[in-house]
Image (cartoon, rainbow, N blue to C red):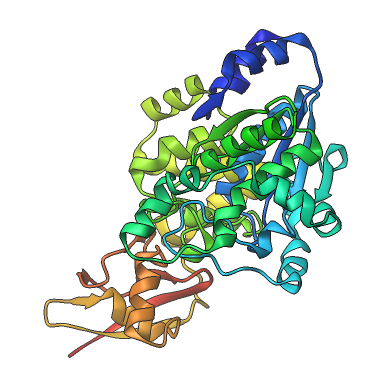
Length: 397
């Protein structure tokens, strides 16, 4: 197997590997590895943050290894505490079934689902009795679990930690036992759980899996990790126009990171684009590259042209509805007033959140400061939320 491809697998968009030398040796040996990825279906939608780990799994798959996708229909009803400052609301069996409906179709945009081994951890947790659970519980210690940073933070804040949350890493580790994983891949927030998997395998007399963590992708707000609950995500199911608009709202400081984590371009190609394009053109290229992966080159070209026509060239359709707002004597208006006038929000608090999450664009520029007066001349093209488009007209106080 080509050492260059293996080096790329082990180094590009990788945060940590345990044990790197052992994994590299296994990859060079030609052995077909069982590479595990577990997911609790907490939401029906996947986003490009999820795609970072799925793209790494595809690299393993392209090298001939077996991807084992574990659907956490049992662990999803427990709730992974990783990175949480409060207990996650457990899912019901109905929630899991609903969220799973479109999950594989979305994952199939990246990995080859037909060549993927798909299992459900409810299959073994429901069938195996109390004796096995007692044996599993003895694989970890209370002190180990309490040393994890997110638990320490919650204890210091006086927040409760449930016994189910304490057991969650052991449940995830037991999945590695049941599927005989050689490697487990996950985000950096999963490091404790992945290391626990090694401990559980050792407890059950199995060779320990190697583990690989990949970076967490920041959302369009540029602050928190991408998450549907934060409203800062770019969904794999988003249509090309929405996807392009959201990408254009990504802070400039994150464009290079998005290129590295979310596209197929090499580091050399990314540096060449950075040196030759303006910040705006660079971000447009980013949007085109990402959309091409999920919707094709033609859709990427159309989305870019439509965005350019709508906002940059101001070739706004005559049928675009008028949004009349009042402006001050200085010719300014608050973004919050524009959002409220559009009907996209029913309260000032809701309008503020929409703006902070990148939901207001005026002539292609994202407005995130809801309290800052904006210069308004009239005739500006405005997007509020995902699909509300207007042309501003004004009146004085």
